[in-house]
Image 1 (cartoon, rainbow, N blue to C red):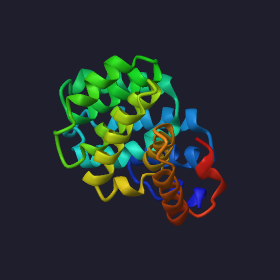
Image 2 (cartoon, rainbow, N blue to C red; image 1 turned 120 degrees about the vertical axis):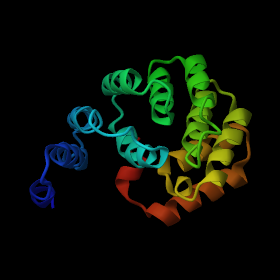
Image 3 (spheres, rainbow, N blue to C red; image 1 turned 180 degrees about the vertical axis):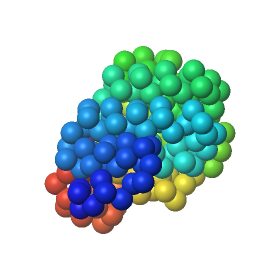
Length: 196
């Protein structure tokens, strides 16, 4: 499959995207992030910025790269080109989170909680900031808003996983157990889903 993915693209930005995805499949997250930045850097200068829905689709891949250095570079690209779009605030929020700056992350995410049908991703980010601050009640509220606002969000593993642990923090064990059961029903017992 990896060989096939690398043969399909016919233009340079798709080559970057395919190489990012292949590296991600191989567990080479830093390499994947570097290719992904090349994709964004090459593709978007001559095109409109990504719409919120396009950005959210890409976010699922970017989030898995778990590499704060590359998020900083991506934030620079977005901030220079489109300082006030949905995707820029989301990237800034996660970048602040990776740096341990929850307050700045909350400010960035809060700017787009009502911005579009994809605002669930901002609620997810806010929930993570509150969870990091050990504010379980606020985290649970944000995760519930995220889950209620989007069908796609309901299948996003990290959101349900963070939500379940926040429910444990507030001692709502039955709801937490329900969330873990939902996770298992969606993902089965794949070993990589626990590799956060």
